[in-house]
Length: 174
Image 1 (tube, one colour):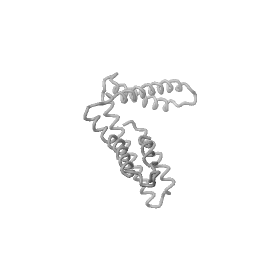
Image 2: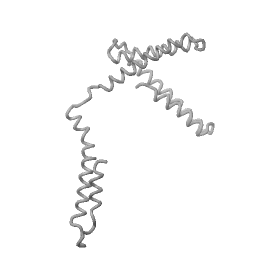
Image 3: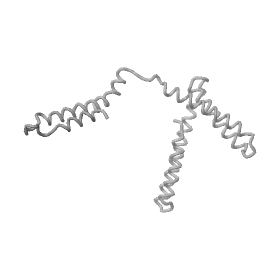
Image 4: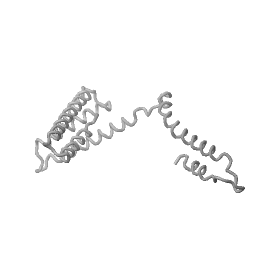
């Protein structure tokens, strides 16, 4: 919306005056209006990040801290739900234990990231795990592409599986 009214007014200037002569400097007015709008939008928009960096301004990592706290609260809620479901007849002990271990590890990692406990290498192990998962997902993608190239797999099925692999990769907490 910035500049839209100014440009509309400039473009609304008549080509001729009531006397029948050309409107004086109409093209110059339109050009200057466009130049000012362009500079304020593009010039300031492109220079603002550099100015913020030069002034050394930052949010102090507030967003990252808030995200870590939120993830930690969500993980604690997940653990509470797992404990509640553990007593249900339809849950399997192995599944409950696997999920509990996953969320307990995530809780320790997030607590270490938040500074609540000492980081005992949780972050490094997690990054190594995530890197390994990415490599494994890449190998699966390559195998699917080879199958499609060899005519053993249709594009539709390949795209459906690739979509699932993409979703799995997007769940990684890098």
